[in-house]
Image (cartoon, rainbow, N blue to C red; front, top):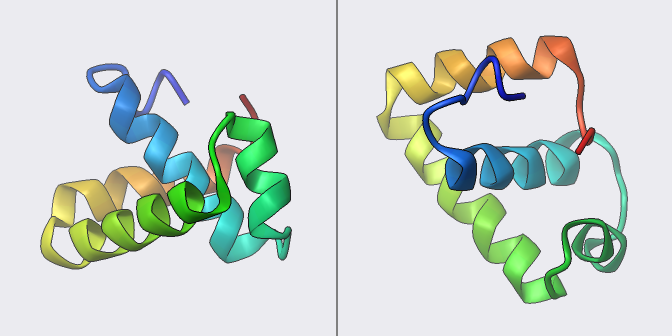
Length: 74
């Protein structure tokens, strides 16, 4: 993760949350426990990242690179 998002740890964390939500099928509660946030925080972070990915080609490229490496690793 650090290799892909080395310049922005917050964005890296939010992308991880988004990818976990989108690709793992885990419950919001379980993802939230993993990242130390509530269910609404998981939902909100995922929604924000999805919107940013739609509008930011660079972020889309970075998130796809990370997805190829691994999903939901801390």
